Length: 286
Image (cartoon, rainbow, N blue to C red):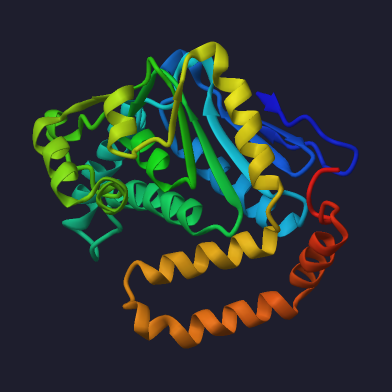
């Protein structure tokens, strides 16, 4: 069992599948099942949801960094969990012959992972993924929902579901969003691999670095994020999400209202004052 390292203002929390530590406004969340290349269990899904909920409600976290222990990010869903869900589904089918239809355990497990991806995709906090080694299945999905993805030059993305006779169901929308329809289809029908250089060319990842340069790259990205006002980041992310499905002309009133709220709000006032005084705003590390 792993324990979150508490800062003076944070409360330590025990996790079964994660390492969690907070450094100022940055919450570092490490998937911690290295013996299974951090394959995702239902326990991990629940704990990742808990971490996000607590970060959003605590008011101290501005950035969540996701990475994996042991040189790999995530090898997708844990097949033992899938087998257990299949067993529960078979038992439910037996009961169903005698009673009203029951919930499909396999679908329920899959839906919980989809809800995890939606939650991280929709958070107003900034999110960063540090991608190393194996990134497969559900790990591929998580890599697609973060705001910034940086990777090592030895990273390998795989979408193996169709080669296992199953469907990349919950991550499909995020694959299309990040890669586009044509590339998502190609990977799905080939069970394809994507290596670092190609991932960068496809904008699946935003930066690629040698392993020894990864921490410095992460520090630079975090520095840049922390220069930006947290409320403005949250509002901008919401506006960009809306812009994906709305014509620009239809967004003019909502965008104008969002700008006005930010300009008249405490962040807008502080940002302008800091610029005129040639100092850093209060939200930026001093």
